[in-house]
Each structure stands twice: as structure tokens, then as C-alpha cells.
Length: 94
Image 1 (tube, rainbow, N blue to C red):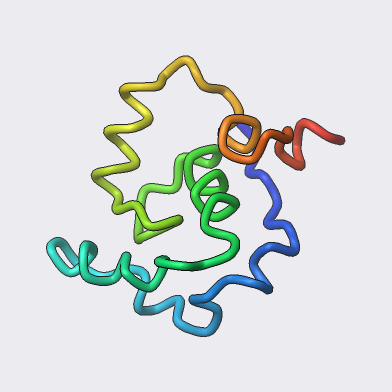
Image 2: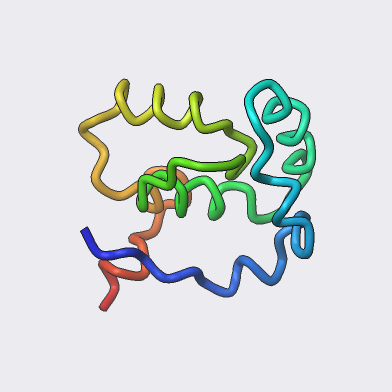
């Protein structure tokens, strides 16, 4: 599966400039995900992580473990952008 491109949504992310904080170890992930609270592009961020099977860090308010669990539970989903945002991902639009 090719890596999908980041859209312009990353410029609006509440965590912009704090990327190092978004990749904590273990239990700190739950604390860090509070950075995502109230972020305008939270769904775009989560769709990016789920569509690309990103294994590390907090994305869209979900920890690594939470995303893995969701992917196992919803293995039928091919395009999380479509599910979360109602529009196909950038790769599918090309």
C-alpha cells in the first residue's frame, strides 16, 4: 500500500511544532493525547494514521494500542478518510 500524502491539514494541527511530544513511551501516551483535545483537524490526523498503519505515537487522540485495536475490530475498512471525513483519501483521488 503506498503511503498517502499529508494534506494541508497538518498546517492547522494544534500540535504543530510539538511533534517530539507526540511520541512518548508507554503510559505517557494517554497523557499526551490531551494535546489533541479540541484540535480542528483531529479526524484528518486519525485517518492519516489509520490509512497508513502508522504504528508509533499519538495521532488524532488515539494511542498506538487504541489504533491497533480499532484496525483489528474494523478490518473491513479500506479508506478511513471516507469513514471519518466522508471523502476519499488523497491517494484515491489521483
